[in-house]
Image 1 (cartoon, helix red, strand yellow):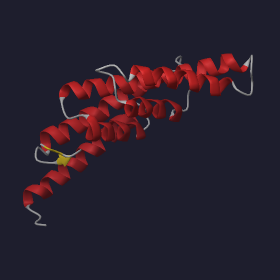
Image 2 (cartoon, rainbow, N blue to C red; image 1 turned 180 degrees about the horizontal axis):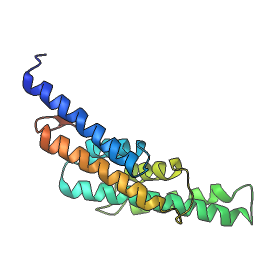
Image 3 (tube, rainbow, N blue to C red; image 1 turned 60 degrees about the vertical axis):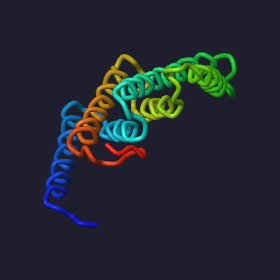
Image 4 (cartoon, helix red, strand yellow; image 1 turned 90 degrees about the horizontal axis):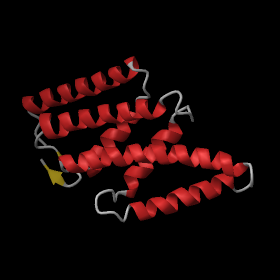
Length: 163
């Protein structure tokens, strides 16, 4: 492996952009981990601009589905405390399976990453605008990944794709 000055400069710019992304999240009081979800999703699934938009929408939908799992779980717990959350998860994930049969919105993993983001956030309420904040964090993550993988490091290989 040969290390060139160009590679060294790219790595420095890559690190600076990552630090800047984290700094923006800190300023906006966003959890930094949501950036990593966006970065990972981009590197794994976003081989085109259309896939990028669809993946972002799927993750956002996953956050919304996680919110509904909470709401339905609370509601069902009033009738069956032992099984309320289980029935809620069963219903939403069963429905989600059928949604992934659609031609466009078919990546189950991105929905689950969105659910992971929602359940990791310290608030269960839409009153605190966690959906907006998490979506903003994901957007920053996707923007960073696009800038780096499809801009700065145009020959970087990710997800089996050589740019």
